[in-house]
Image 1 (cartoon, rainbow, N blue to C red):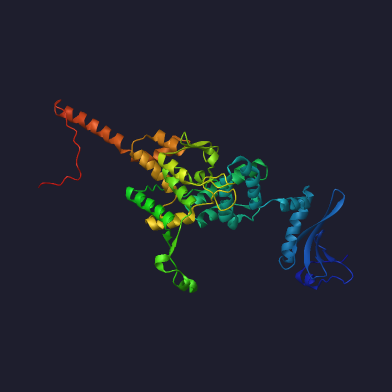
Image 2: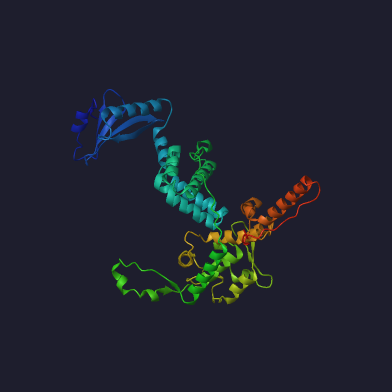
Length: 429
């Protein structure tokens, strides 16, 4: 077995004989440190030692990536650790078996979220993983994910504060779950201490005029179709119909879904996933066995009942808003809603804003926040409180009463007349 000082010149000169699968050169200064040459031309530094009566060998790294001096330094560390009872091979094998963050996250989704959370939550988490986490550190071993990695992800997507804040919370949840499995330490959670971006809840309520335009667009789209635009710069644009004939009719189920959203204040998936067997026409309700907040009753006005009465029932499809696939509900409302809001001049209005508008009308009519919360299916009163400022009548009555009492006291008990101002009365000069 050749021995000698392992230097760059010696390693470069080392060749593997044609009749062997490898050949070694062992360092004569550091026992157990060597370099192996292979028929392919590859050369790798190794450390060899005896442990529990067995000869063991660890590959340190390839020549070229490591210099002889760098390899010798690592060999000293490995051989020194063996003297203290460590097992470098077992440690290396264990390090290779540490899973990536992405692999752990997928297990979290499959073993925890899929069994204990709603399917829509699982879909949302999966989207967060694919869009925000995986591109930044999903392929890293989970134990190597640092706070700087997570902060880098958070900073990279700062233009989407709501989503990336949820991605941050997702990372934290995955880590805490992995800690319960014994894969990481709970105290090392890399998402801990990273400040979330401020989020400004958007409250967009349709005005009376906007509701009128929405209704007109729905009627037009269902009756004769809504106009669509053609990109004149495209080669095939010359074959498009003339401008006055560019119309596309809306799916009646899509129109019905949009009407039901504004008439019930329900969430989009609650309407799309609702089934005929859940409808009680006599009582005017839809009973949902499951929703975002659990069991829920959607209350139907006469107008909402009229929408349902006009809808056909598709044989073999139990859903109120039938989709194109057999037995399935409509997947979403994005395309018809884009056409409707463009025709109605409601650019920037989201489908979810129809729910806000339903609540705002109820609050403005002084129906009371508890009633509105029940109609919307809120599980917490604080969620409904966002509409409190729209309930102007109780505040008007309160301020009038207080003002009259104060004025009466100041006038020596003569009292004060509460006047109603006519905003439209013109001044007589």
